[in-house]
Length: 327
Image (cartoon, rainbow, N blue to C red):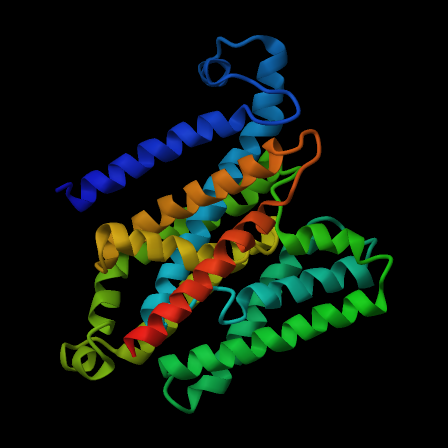
């Protein structure tokens, strides 16, 4: 039987292979050998320009966003102790979407940097409100989940209102709301990269604390772990990862739900291994979703968020049915 570390290594290799193949998919197909040649500097000039300036930035973006949402989902499921938890469930994605849609529709002349900043601000506001509502009960996991669902519903209603109020202008926001890697450049990569490089190591350093929290708050307190403070810290990390990811590429539904579950099936519940596996699984899923969106009907593109939703909605129902049969 393969060890968890071998499974992680195998998945990393598979993700690397998929990334190379996905780089060549588009209106102009480029073979994997040409992609590799471009990466090592031996490809023809035409292919090299397409790969380095247009294809590779979105591949790197898919890797960063997939990792961010995968780790965020794994943290949220751990601290809320609910297998259905994800950035979507606690309202982070909806809050970011409402803020971004508001900027697009109410301030169309705003600079392009205003969109990701607004999305990150919306995610932060949802987190603050979530904490304030749940504070009186000691940041109870069930309270966090229920309040998050309610806040997400309110934000979704706000988005629906904007769609009705601005039926013509909403087209500009719909692409962002569905989640897409189209048109991403190295500037977008540099915008997200510091968040992932800082927050992912922090989440790994907190992995042991998450394992202790899974034993229950009373046991954690008995072992000297301040459960409430640790849960708040982990919540901030999870929200920052999800908010930064959604701010750059838009709303990618269910990715933060599916990736941690697949990772848990492969390596178990120890967060030291679960978090890296959730990151790699998120990378692989988003790379596949984006490649399908570019490859089904080129030169037209289907947003990656549509594929993650198509895959995630049935999986969510499966998990819900599984939970009902076990309770």
